[in-house]
Image 1 (cartoon, rainbow over the protein chains, first blue to last red):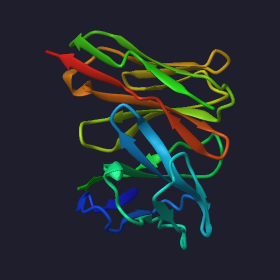
Image 2 (cartoon, rainbow over the protein chains, first blue to last red):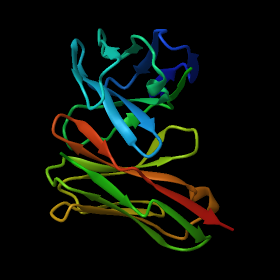
Image 3 (tube, chains in turn green, orange):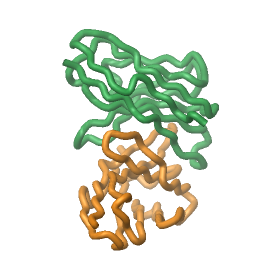
Image 4 (spheres, rainbow over the protein chains, first blue to last red):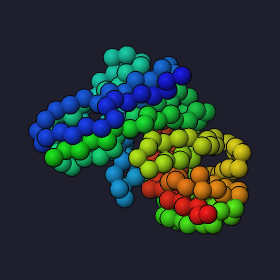
Length: 114
Length: 111
């Protein structure tokens, strides 16, 4: 069972460049989400999706785009990278049944914007 | 707005000690609470999940309790080992399937 797979594990970008962080899960989870983790700030929700074709904004969506064309994949796109987007990004997935199931997290992508 | 607080922020204990990590949340309208472990530079590993209707869950040396009415959860670690050294995060699942995280407790278990 692969679980939640994130690529790449590390990335260095120059300010203004764009890139896509990939996330794939093989558990048939309806719900997928992206978080960023910053020192002293904890994990904060960027975008989430409740199913294919449906996405919505979280707490810190500015500068990021998402799409969900399949159940398995939920890529996160940085439109024009800024140093403030230097962070560790985690993708997570879950079944949609509200209280019964917990979340499974990927191993993260460490992004540095210079 | 849901806020989650974890106390203490850091903890250092000798090997073999029993310890308690605390998590409190401001809005009791949660679906479940999940405890995670994070090793330096790594992802989050789920330890225990407590549904809102449950009072506690156990896995090996770990026991998590939930008091939804008072907005509190505790993670009890029995007979701590150096391998338990990590950051422990609690997260509450709220309406819309969203997670709100605490900022974590950094645990160091010394020989």
